[in-house]
Image (cartoon, rainbow, N blue to C red; front, side):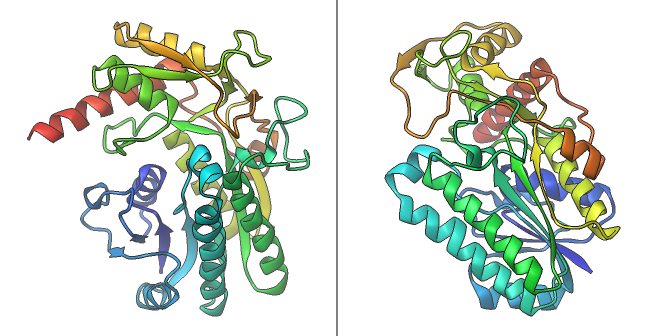
Length: 329
């Protein structure tokens, strides 16, 4: 029996594959390599190059590898792009997820772990925000993910499928052993952008808005280290295998840092100053969003191991230096 990881050649998916291999699990990856990398998938893992919305491809993969569990990462994730191109996000993130779920239920998949997002909350009424807060996404990206949560809820009632949906907060850092990291050249993740600027790979970086109602005027976010997030999926898998009922959980540290906090941390840890240009707000950005994480701890037994911003920044710096060296090889 194998676990199907969609988007397993991407940032979070590649860390998930490593966690599964470390645990002795059999893994198969489906990835169209639009943002992922073939080299990010270990050689011993079968990589099926194709789209997770291709039902024939997914059926064949499930049958060939005896898949009973799916961990679904593949998606488009850039909030401003979703505002500019909403139908692209509803097509890729929502409609294709529906096609994947249709195949999963037809083929007898029993457990499904979904990569959701804190963007479903929009601008929360309180922080830390809990799963009880009614979702009110501010962007097509957030809506596209919330729709999949709704589909999972309905499908699980009609079919023999249990699921965990993890609402990620801001994912950052890299594998502590240096095996993987955020590799997309033009990624919009704040810590990656700041690290690239510190290393001289960007001439400057932009700070989007200094007029938010926060302690320093910049947006506040909860940054979760990527291996801690992958381990949350491992805990979710264990929970479902033990007969746990379907659940939606936040995945974050219950601690927020502002954009300025992060920039200053990158400058301090790297020992380098760099240019930061303040520009206007981006559409779809809430002022502050921090995870309430009591449920993921009580239901899944998850505990963070890398919840230190300095450590996360050091991981990102080391990985970016490795990428730069790789480009010159």
